[in-house]
Length: 615
Ligand SMILES: CC/C=C\C/C=C\C/C=C\C/C=C\C/C=C\C/C=C\CC/C=C/C(=O)SCCNC(=O)CCNC(=O)[C@H](O)C(C)(C)COP(=O)(O)OP(=O)(O)OC[C@H]1O[C@@H](n2cnc3c(N)ncnc32)[C@H](O)[C@@H]1OP(=O)(O)O
Ligand SMILES: Cc1cc2nc3c(=O)[nH]c(=O)nc-3n(C[C@H](O)[C@H](O)[C@H](O)COP(=O)(O)OP(=O)(O)OC[C@H]3O[C@@H](n4cnc5c(N)ncnc54)[C@H](O)[C@@H]3O)c2cc1C
Image (cartoon, rainbow, N blue to C red; front, side):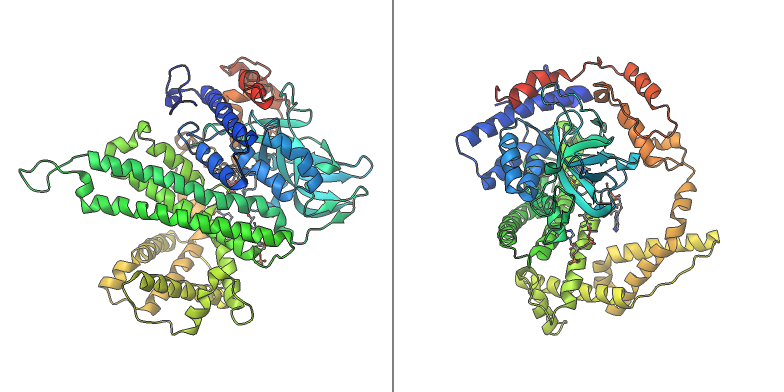
């Protein structure tokens, strides 16, 4: 087994180039996953411990910044299990299990990540040839982000708008070969490469993928839930959201992942705090361990408690996930909305809390926490990504809110599912029950809070009609900024205000309404207000923040500068805005420090032997 922080020719991975990082990741991954495959062959893995084995590996020191093979295990295989019919599973699963094919999961596009009903990639059924034609009509339709897709995967699950007999039936999943299994070259009609350097997970080889009227057999549509018959007839799924199953699975798994990362970070910070001596509690005494300071305990101990709370929660969520999936197999969809809401809520809460806790652990270690060798910056990069991928946290919390408001509205007409049964009690008893400073009392208090917030949200949704105009006067706008700043911090520091001022409950409720009103009032001037900072593009140096708003073209231009994209030469239109795409590609390739080798040498040296079971 490779040693911790395996090096590349003697150089710690922090000092590797972008290309060397990738090669190091491939080499470490094929060795690590060869062991997983050996465990499979010896019958030592099941779907349950598989999650822990792979999850442990992906978060381990061997694959410390992710793996180009991660998506193969995390989403490609679960998507086949969750969305392919039996015949398709028989065809694809054995090859995926033994890694003779390597897959990814391509759903997000340059132009859409959250709003998946707005995805632009099309899959149009051609009954004459019994094929689907995959196409990327615009630059924003390019798949953007799929892990491992840059230079590693040769298959992927692609989510596209399904058209048959001239009608669109919404997004569906397809299994698609994107590279030749022998040469690893992109197949004709496929435009593929990696998206470039990121805040973290720089070993994951996230890629982009565009289709130019690319044909696949009809039987490559994953048909467990919905089907397209040979004559093009569409047979719809029992529940429109069963196709979203892969996302629910990963959200559940992410909660386990947060337990791993939070446990690591707080272990590092707590042990360091026991070693580190700084300043004296009393003059003349020896310097004390910083762990003795209450402020240091305030920073760290809640993370220890959270790690245990998340582990218990993750196990309970995993049980619920398996229970509901068994019911789905029997056609009982009753608890699917609750599972979706639970997975959304717990993925958002555990990732946000873990990111905040890991940052506190870094800060608790002073300057040494800022060193890459502490592993805290890298861990932060890993966990903060989880606040975005697999459903951006805000959006997932809105999904949870949607479920809770709907549950409240049906409180008297529908039986409550286990996780929201408390709402019935909170609704039945008087709200302002006495407070008790016990664990049960605090939980009870939060249940009452949840109930009241749901009622307020329902009230706002049903009654609130806000029509507003904004005066163009700058004075007016600046007043709004002052107003926003005051109400934001009043709400942020509400516990202090409730403790030390006579603010009433009614005033708090109107403060919240005023805050939302100020947000709405400022919205029309938001871009103008940042333009007013007059920061030139050269100063911003950001593909997202340039003055002209050409975000997607700049993202693609920057991606093309990656040294990994020089091989193989991309034959692709890329939807360029000025049409000089080929000249530019050639110019960029000539600048690349890489040889224009047809395929990165790691394919022949590591990946192909691994896929052929020779490693
Ligand atoms: C075989 C292998 C076995 C084990 C695996 C091995 C190893 C794994 C172990 C460890 C792995 C280690 C680490 C894993 C950790 C991290 C993962 C690493 C990498 C992650 C890579 C990232 C991948 C991605 O990011 S993929 C792309 C993710 N994208 C999203 O999540 C998009 C988010 N957007 C949405 O989900 C939707 O757009 C939406 C926001 C939900 C809105 O959808 P829509 O507009 O259609 O719906 P409405 O809001 O109108 O609601 C309508 C209705 O539908 C219900 N609904 C919505 N979604 C779902 C769902 N998913 N399930 C069920 N129901 C859903 C919604 O509640 C509404 O219902 P009502 O009408 O009744 O209210
Ligand atoms: C490290 C990493 C790995 C990834 N891997 C993959 C992968 O393997 N495969 C894949 O398909 N995708 C992958 N993704 C993409 C990821 O799923 C998307 O980035 C994510 O779904 C968010 O979508 P977005 O980027 O379009 O952000 P947006 O949705 O554009 O979010 C931008 C802002 O808009 C806000 N917003 C958006 N919609 C609403 C709304 N309805 N209400 C209120 N606010 C809203 C959000 O809260 C956010 O503040 C990855 C992303 C990252 C960072």
